[in-house]
Length: 392
Image (tube, rainbow, N blue to C red; front, side, top):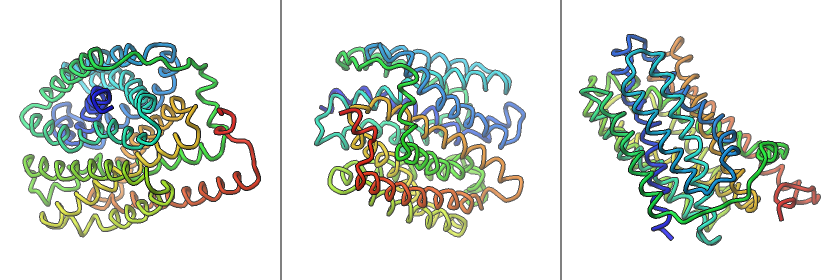
């Protein structure tokens, strides 16, 4: 099974490296493009927001295509966008290139997840989704710090490297992935699940969890500036530890979700996540505690996404492609919102205090999860029709 999943994980690794690495390069990009760091941070917001919109729209436009061909096409667009970013000499040019790149990435993430769900047996679906999503999280552990280190001399080099990675992923998909045809759907049908309150609430939790994570993460370089004395090498190591934590949380969530109720795991992880964010300011006062905190923080960032995917697939297996596409949109909408709010809050507070508003967002996600769980219990109790029933 994992041989077939490997090219899908490589594709998400390319997307993750591209989306995450910008956060580590923001100071250099801001200086080169002659804009402020919060303004440069909106490159992350624009990328994520475009991806959130592109996932359902382009997912619908390519729904009748073989997933292999759709992924190859998307990866080529993705690579072209990164080349254009590397060649950009103005903020407007780089912003436009990031939007093009995100359009390709919007197809990659949802297509890779839906393909993984189709080619894996039901009893191993959680681990399969975690493996493919592991490409996304592995990029935090390897792609992000490596890209930051490469880009410490010239951030353009990192984008050239990501473009090459996209082309390698396209080649891997062409060689290793079998033909996968999924039922074509109309655009209206792709949005139909949003009429169900449980699905809408679940997607909102995904969005809020990522908003809380990226409100701080997008500006982590600025938040750690005094602690690391502006050292790019130290920042790279902190990001590496954080990324290992994300990967560990991702894999742990995949295994646990095959054994225990995903709702309980999600609630527990959000409670701990909130506490860790509240402790961010004292934790980053010295380098030793920064590394410990980064590892725990990363693990908690890696947990919710896998659990949310598992909840959605278990809720309505026949609607998997549509639901995972919407979940991808929620993920990147959360990233966009987190980047935007992080830039906004810096008008009032120092970056080192961004963990406080981030914790506030995760509390809202926690409360919404509790409401969602109770709502679903009521639906089951009264036998109210749901998406799961309509797709069986």
